[in-house]
Image (cartoon, rainbow, N blue to C red; front, side):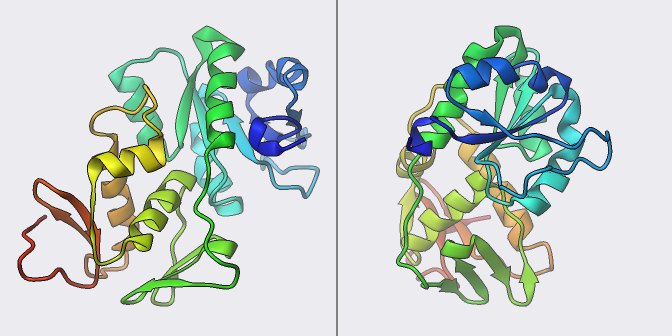
Length: 234
């Protein structure tokens, strides 16, 4: 079956609350991967990379470790209540999305299906995208700023790829929300600004100059420098 439909897609479950849904996920056509019984470090028994990672609410501390292994695999963190505090915790943890543990498997299955069915930009094999010293190899999911490797979440990489595909041009907010969040009800009004901020922080972590510019009233532009008529906002 096509993994994009959620059928036979391999998922990694981390934490007791996530593990409790193993049987339900199997019934829904997913293939939970086995994990090492030792509590730390958490290592997959199989070398197969998951297509999504599902974390229990108390496992947010493992997101950095998971990102090092699979930089662009969607990570869904469980939260107990759909609140501003819960959403902020999800965003600041580095997860791509949350799932509500209070709703059991129903909310998780819906969000998992959305992430696995989301189309990804498909550049030609072997191509690289570059602006100034920023180089992205999409087929390898590799991002470099000069000699520094930049680890991005799946959502951050998707945002960067869209901006790179329109490099030198202003991309309006509505287009970015459609391309990346597909008008999901869970996408808060400021979610784009949050992810642009996270992406800037990672791209500028080594003291590099800004490449993602905010153009007041219009959107965002990825460029070495903006044309003079455009008015960037910090």
